[in-house]
Length: 220
Ligand SMILES: Cc1cc2nc3c(=O)[nH]c(=O)nc-3n(C[C@H](O)[C@H](O)[C@H](O)COP(=O)(O)O)c2cc1C
View 1 (cartoon, helix red, strand yellow):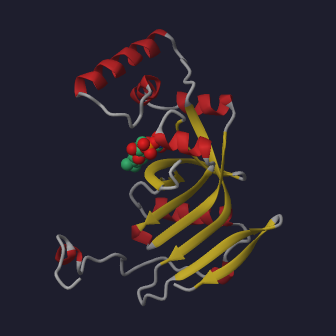
View 2 (tube, protein in one colour):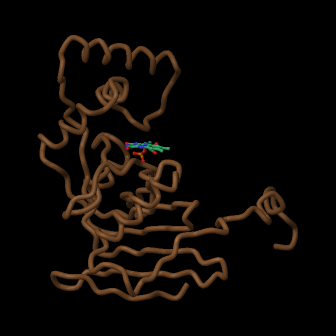
View 3 (cartoon, helix red, strand yellow):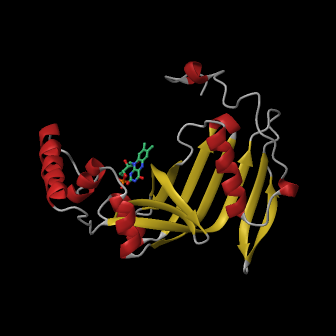
């Protein structure tokens, strides 16, 4: 462990948190994690945090191995946090087999992390289609072409498949996807983590308790 690896010297001393971070008083936190999330996301947007709606979605594979990737948060409803993807993708298949997920947000400029764990449900066909139709035409073409995350033999293969689907979309306005799906993560637990310059980071965990939420502080 004493011999440095390839990047130890590179990353040593790189600051993680800014000097100026928003205050967080967990005693004053609202009763619902949904309300606190909206407060924190609003603040992240106002502070100009890059892609504040980008979130790491972790799922579990058939082999019990975790898998994770970044997706976009589409909405937050009383039912939970919504992301979208194709059922015909590794994450789509993993969620179909094991509808459990974790979401992790990190907003560096605010020194904030939010972690959500819960069970996952899929939206109605109408909601899936409404989200699909809001997507950029090339994004829709890619979904229609299918095979997300399967091996790509060449760039030409991709261009041909996208071109074909763009033509189909141009010919038939409102063409639907059979695989595009909005997934809602219904929270069992939501943790809000606020960095502190003196390393006494503040962690507030909301856990489901009957119809409401239990709130506890966690050791940093
Ligand atoms: C910032 C960002 C946003 C992304 N948003 C989405 C998204 O909303 N839905 C999606 O399916 N993939 C999205 N991706 C691509 C995924 O990270 C991933 O590469 C892809 O969905 C395949 O994942 P899978 O093989 O685990 O199914 C995004 C990637 C980045 C970097």
